[in-house]
Length: 114
Length: 109
Image (cartoon, rainbow over all chains, first blue to last red):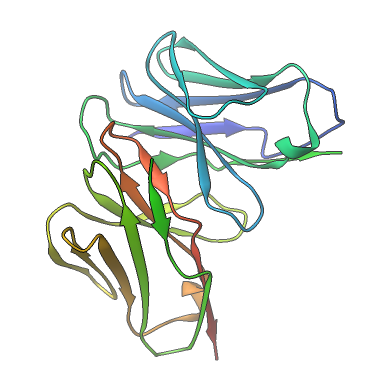
């Protein structure tokens, strides 16, 4: 069966520090991968999605970046965190190729930038 | 882009029925999803509608009208554990899910 792992679960970082959040998927090949962010009391905002290794699409301009070094690994990074980067970050995957596919979410990372 | 609107909060008593409405505006449509999200947790899938009509799954039902850009999620026989945020999400023409802000449902004894 397919599983998705996301870590860490919680993270407290000072403003200006770097960030690296990692997500891995098991039990499936060539998944579509996504990074979402959810601010407190808000909906999910799509940040990045990837349809394959090295293929990253950015949805919103920001100081975050994403990379996909392996088929089932998706990394969210920042060189210098801002206060506004605080939020709940969710990695998700879906089966590749089809439109309207269901998303499966990781357990999320609660990031607090102080 | 997408405009997805749903109420911010709804309150209902245990055993009652609650209907959460969602309206959307999109230049491309490939389906509508409802997700449930408990505080501090990841969303979990509830339902998917791509054709007009009602989809029933136990205590939860979801309805879609594509011509009206409208959907609702119906929760019957409410239980305390149903207290959560319910997210409406629309698949755009690129196949990506865009989410509404969510409706917080509070179930009272």
